[in-house]
Image (cartoon, rainbow, N blue to C red; front, side, top):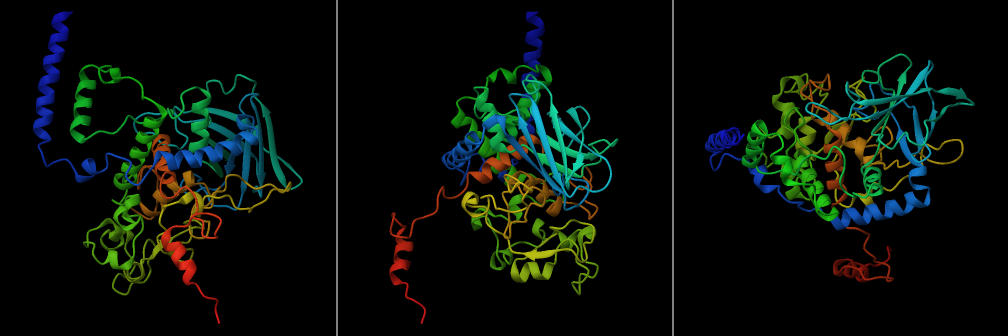
Length: 457
């Protein structure tokens, strides 16, 4: 036994030496060394937002009324529609209620998915995921509904990550009219109910420099449990700090197998998480922002005349900083698009994530959370959540071709990546609006502006 252990240790040492020889100083990408902290992100900002949400959630019943919005989310649904709905789960009693408005003709069934982690997996329904077929929707008075009782033990060992409305007889892996995803805050709340707040399922291990990740792989190849013996994530603050840091790294470095773009391609950290024409003019011609100028499958039909532009319009991008968006789906790229500036992602809680009173159900309630991301609140078609926005952004801006085929033109994020990206974006910017009405202290610049203001003549 001792000889076997010694042999393994010698092998590990040899492999480590070879690995370090390959990773000579200067070969680690700059992103690996520059993004090892939360940057502009703040655990305090994230927790302030979470605590506000939790107070409302608890007042509305907590886990006796967990609500997941359903919509034709870009990148998650397989078809575009105006259908929308919601699922309300009583996780303690094991009951589920589903309501869907504007359901197309045909028979539709509802599925509940618990995504399983692992290499090559994503948030989409895939073989190996845990699935619950809940039954068919029943049309009544313009609404389609479904009520199911699974029993009190149903959610003791089952975490609902995704909901799909699928044509009866079809596989939700291939057919999804509506999709809904549990949000980061819902997942954090569940972790707290288990006494492990901040320790999320699907959480990736804390990122480390490339050299350390190589050593981790080398050790795992010889002794799979060696690296795992480091132990659990420590206190919740540290867990959230690591989550935000992973989200920041993903935001600025993850290309998701696409055309080379990242979230940071348009939301530059050194430009207040946006871009403008002056900044664009300083970029080299091979910057991923300009993929429509050098990737043939994404170029305009006539690049010289700048006509037939279906992915980006290079002239409008360079002159005005405008990005092409297809909020209404990808079925008519030549006609269904908008050109928009790049909004910063600071202070999302105050600027865009407050629910809007839109798309009401017959009882007058809205589709929560309906966070309405983007300049005009339609940045994430579907239920409008920041979480769905992440997949929509990858589908819109990262593809290698206009086919936008998941697994070919880009890779759909995992549950863990979506947790991290959502945490990072929710951790940015101020926690509350500055007071400039005399009732509270205003920043000096705001106060100065108020004193100098004069009525219009």
